[in-house]
Amino acid sequence: MAIFPWFRKSRPQGYYSGKYLTSGEFEWVKLQPFLLQRGYQLRPRFQPNWIPSWKRWNNFGRQTWLSSEDGLQVLVHVDLLDAIRVKDGKRVVMKMVKTEKFELPLLLLLNEGVIRKHPDNKIVDVLDVLLRPDTDETALVVMPHLINFALIPFQFVSEVAEAFVQFLDGLSFLHFCNIAHRDICFFNLMMDGTDVAPAGFHFATDNRPERGNPDQPPPYKARRSVPSIRYYIVDVGISRWFLHTSKIDDRRIYGQWGQDNTVPEWQQQDEPHDPFKVDVYQLGSVFRRIITHYEGLDMFQPLVSSMTSINPNDRPTAKEATKVLKELVSSFTESELSRRTSYKRCSPEIRKRLESGLESPPELLKYREYLFPEFRKC
Image (cartoon, rainbow, N blue to C red; front, side, top):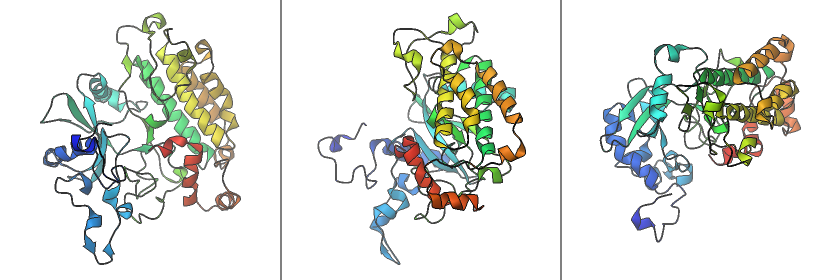
């Protein structure tokens, strides 16, 4: 990570602890006046006149930076930051996008008119695009504040089925548009958590609510208990639009990209591959992890096995996989859809609480990091 010159030789103790702003965070501090003028408020940490709250006295004495909201540091994705839209208080996320790349035009295309309104279009909404006053090399894309699809534990078979169907619908739609996502992996699959977790998750850490008691895990409901949950696909930064052809031989490409390095085609580095088949593998690989770590989901195994076949020619297209999945789900009885599922490593106590009908024990959240190491990196 690039750092300011005065930190190069000797970084202060606590530089990566939240006590100090990183160089990536300073970029947002510089943009704060402009963003406020455009109607977006950043958190206290990113105000130009920020005074750390733990350096001020309150009725209970001084806080420590560990317990302070403005001590939470953004380290992993410094090109992303949350904000509040002033006019309505809506939580949003801003992303710095290079204007020379195809990401911004593709996002705008997929948010255009009838394309945006298509029910199978699961690409994240673009709420606003801000052209920076200090450079034309990057622009700021404003999107809804979403959470990772696996952040809240699945508790019923119907919840898993709904997520799988929406993601495959989204991939099928992209492929119908001749767009290969090329990184439809764990971190790029999201959900709108507004109804299922009303208190929200803090942007910098998923172990703390946005509102409420910071010492308690974020409260959440069973997905099944809310009217509907919309799932999204994000990050088209390396996506490829094959505008003038749909022939398989004309859409083969080289290179390895994305989060999943287990793609079989990539083991032969000098061989071209079909990115549409890679998309199917990557999404199938995510599904495989879910059915591996949750119990009672074996009914999805045949589909997942076909999507993750070593030979890409043995994999279904996204459209074919969607058809198979929907036929499978439609064959389930109501009792099968209502069957509970939980982490295979759940303690007997939590399992008993789930079976007794008590929804959403907060202790379930701690199992995420054991089963999905990605959450340790957030």
